[in-house]
Image 1 (cartoon, one colour):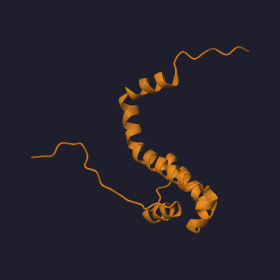
Image 2: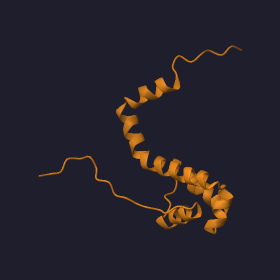
Image 3: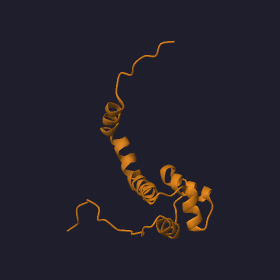
Length: 108
């Protein structure tokens, strides 16, 4: 069985999707979760810890850390501030939450 070469690269497909308003809106809606997930994973990696080690430091079980890290990518669960704070402390970080003004114009 011969495999046919793709007609587009991954980058070309993503570029095409990003021009679609529906895709762009859906991606922007998830941007905060993806950013937080990247930060959690990077902090754990920089701390040199496994999920099991983070769980032990948090006083929980490894599946809870797995759920926390995967919940952000599939929107099944929104972790509490307390949970995020425990995770941050376990990986040697401090949790900070910031509000950023939206880009909408102010009403006069």
